[in-house]
Length: 122
Image 1 (tube, rainbow, N blue to C red):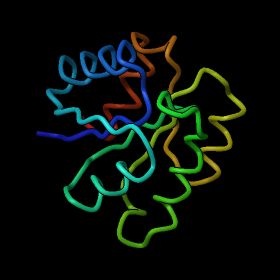
Image 2: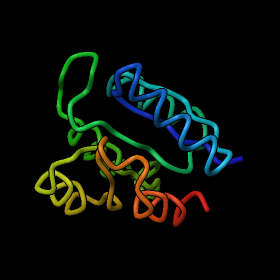
Image 3: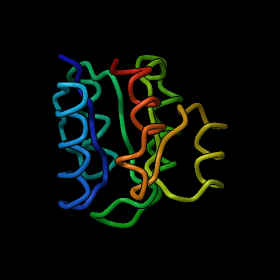
Image 4: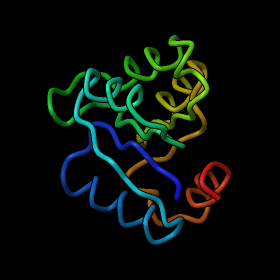
């Protein structure tokens, strides 16, 4: 079973993401709320994908900061990460920092979102 760490989503968005990933890919979805919890969970167990909200629900910090921490850690850097945002300029910034192309909250049901996820969780 594939495992996904979902970071910084509010309860409704986490539920929608969890439903998508469980239904489409049979993945287990674990939630984290901030940078420390994210890094602790990544160091404590294997994950196939990390999804990070652009602005964390818990404290509205920048999800790109967590992405950069993951990609700068030699042990965690190979873990695929996607940014969850509707804004193309932030997607581009995330990709430049080492992320896979992500998707926005308005794109959960789109075929291209499923294809992006399938490349990792397929």
